Image (tube, rainbow over the protein chains, first blue to last red):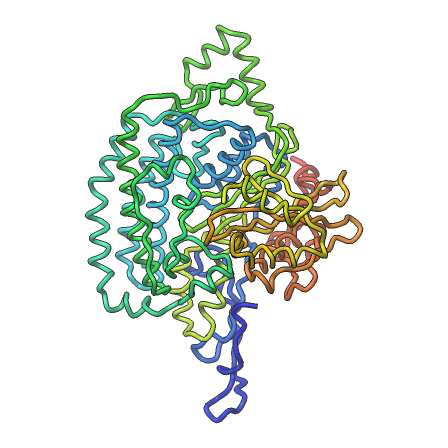
Length: 422
Length: 166
């Protein structure tokens, strides 16, 4: 088993067995465990001898629930798994269902999906930067990180009607086109953000405390990472250039010009540097998306047996049916009403089969194993969440090191418990 | 390797190879599972060195009832495939692959937690997401939604469908 400690730290300088270890529970409610993660730590003074992560405090039965809902309703469940990367959850699920259906979303919808995923990658990395900074004592970084994220939340809200759990990416496309206001807000973000990332760097990169707390801390070699199934920035910080956007492209990622940042040090500092670089690369992609969005086009497949019937718009209380559409189905067309009713209550019928679809989430390989038995709801949805798999690396990163370094190690792992426990 | 090539290549060594929706699935017997994964990893053309995902599906009408799926990925050759193995309803057991792929540790625990499939040889096969004292295996198809008592701060809250509004 990985992370099993040798008996070396248990022995004192003259070889006698030391027995004064202490077992403490860190969590499940602890400000630096990123949600409800509990670590069972055996300590010898300040040194961690064994570490056992205990999870499940946030389990909400998302996978089971999807089996009792329509395919379209499944989106609203999976988007809540890893709550810091809702667009990725929606995208992975929808791509899986689209492959079962044998359809592909229109080109403009693919661009909008890429746009929002990359903005979401930035916002997720910003939360990581903010919380990581807070845990290591850099409170100002916490304030800056959340300030920048708020700008992105505003973009998301103006386009999708919601700050989180958008259910914006739908089977067959996206639910609404992006409007000029959303585009302009994104352009504004792109103007401001590069300077802000430079600011983060000038605050942290050469900061002696930041270097001391991160360099050489939480080392996870590429061999260990691959054996433990660790992906994402953790793996790329260990010198492996694995990125599903390049390796197994989806949504046309092969047509975008961007680089995959890789570093060799495999420590917390390398992960910090990688995430900052990834934000810059994401902005490059967003810029290209905005150019491509100059071309108008449909954002949902034309097949009435798949496409969501309603025309939605963002109103004062979030997303809702447009007044014109309500007038149409209630006053003008009985057929439209029947069609609406059937699509909303029963929805799309998906041919039997199974697929495993992956997307590169901010934390690594996010996989959706989706099985259909030919009905109106999924037969099985398994979310392979990168946080869940990556968290297995905690013992090997913290055992034999100081407890203060355990905080930095977990922070650099960036687990989101909503995704871990699902 | 593209999926069609991969499927052709695998048909030389395996009986049950399925190519569907650009995904290759090999269905093997339980006793062959570990040897299969070892072969797929050792073969230099295939080099399936990365286990992405371990999960299961419950098919109450099928025999065997449970199907455990292993999603394999090759970092070197950049391709994917799936290995599936059945587990009987009466005694759902599958050999553990945690010693070959340490990432399987938590993933097999999760399958055990939700389906009650026992992974022989697993170092620590305990519940992982549900409480240790939980009864039943919720992702089985015969476990319905709801109907579960909730405990909160010592208070006993009946299932949703048995609560009264008065």
